[in-house]
Image (tube, rainbow over all chains, first blue to last red; front, side, top):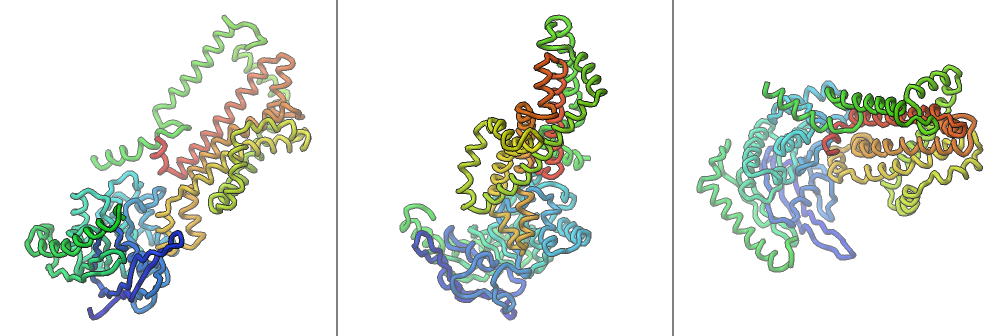
Length: 265
Length: 274
């Protein structure tokens, strides 16, 4: 990692509710290289989404710092863009207008913005769908729009919060493949949060495995599978060993969580 | 070919279900319905219900309308009532949207006002018309006050509901793209709540019209309400029906204008009206 674009330095987070403080994240540190694809994987409640939101600047850390290109993050910034979970599109805007949102906020001229966004729609496989409303297209297509909306502002880092979680299995696999294709064109740095182990291993250069109570990184696993990765990679023994290893780490975690709390949190 | 077919199917069905102006090819039913009722009215009043004190043929209403229009008093009455309606409705819209927005963004404002808003929305507020005549006189001020009072509540309630319904996710998206407060208001809060606000305005049309007419009953110098009252006192059934038809036509026109506006401003909502 010669050129870190992002560094997370001893970040902690406590939530206070009813006068009781809960430690959500305890002392998290890692760095991400420029152009790297990093997946954060862990059981629900391990704080992976909170960590992503701290990196995005949507939530403040209780202590520690996040640096992008050496500068401390104090809020959302043009160097990062978030791809949200399902249904964060504006239903009153067409597909094209949704993709254009970030550019409008920045005051980019309509003509220039449209030209750029139409090109992006082609790239995410939505050429010709610009005038549709979100409710008129499928879940997979909506997430393509979501991705295009983030790419439109040309961020250095894409932050993706379980973007394919609500899709059916086949669509999800297709979208994973598409994401890799788009990523290899765009060469962005990606932080991808997911609870799906195989999704993390298939997509990422590195998988950070998280455990809960408090949220922490238990292992940092480089995935040495050459790219491009066709879907068949998922059926190789090498891929299986990565998945088994991570599942082994999480299984302990899931069991412990199931034993210590009455209901899944 | 297949592509265009999908497109056409994907866009139509939602929009077609909105009230107001019907899609192409269905308007004839509305026309037929109007003509049928007019025909039944005309024939039945000439053959069965022939007492002119109770109901008169539609053609008599038309004749009477022409006579009153020629004398000039009809135009003054229409102008008075519509001007009162327009001002009352405008005041209700401005006050209603403002108060509704404040109640949505401030829990304190909501807590202080909500009991009054729901109580006054549910009570027949037209009952205050006679008091308003005493307070504001028999001129246009009292009519505007009654119309505004009646119309303001559905606008408040719908505006508040619309802004509160604005999804947390949408606000977060705006923040993550570093939208300013004003941009978030203009690009997220306003479009998200617009369909609700227009629905409130649509409900308010009928209430404002009722307010104007009833207030005129209790004392006015001109107006369609006064025309209805004075016609009934002199058994001028034709003039009475004329005034009612004008009011009904105007109300229908306003509602369909607002529906058109909603389709223009919020085509995405067409989907969820089903």
